[in-house]
Image 1 (tube, rainbow, N blue to C red):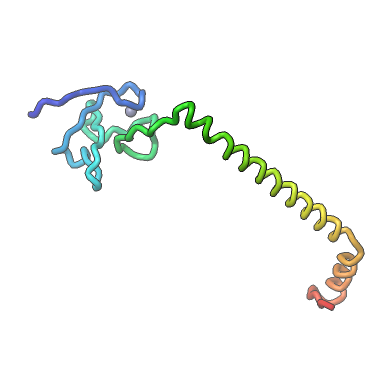
Image 2 (cartoon, rainbow, N blue to C red):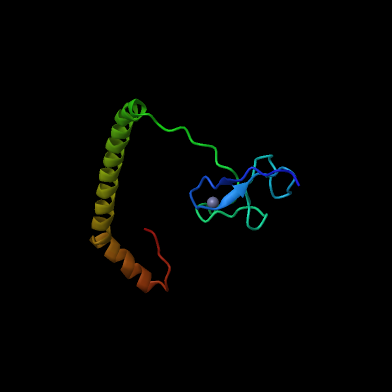
Length: 121
Ligand SMILES: [Zn+2]
């Protein structure tokens, strides 16, 4: 049997795993390495990762200057969202006002009078 290089799962679950290209479960269809659990000799279903066994590629982390550079955009987005929310609130207030206005009451009366069908003027 080929020597296995056993290592700890890099997701921090504490399991011993190894990589085996000859194991049908050791590779994804796209050719990625799948960690094999030492105990079961099958794909390591990590409790810390529910979506499958593919080895995660480390995501590039944002440096602090990069984060700071993003801040103005985030502030702009927040300002835009606040503006949009204000517009929506205004629209909702307007809709509520219309709903409670006489025109809607008339429409309700029409609804009652005409077997559930609304006759538009
Ligand atoms: Zn794990």
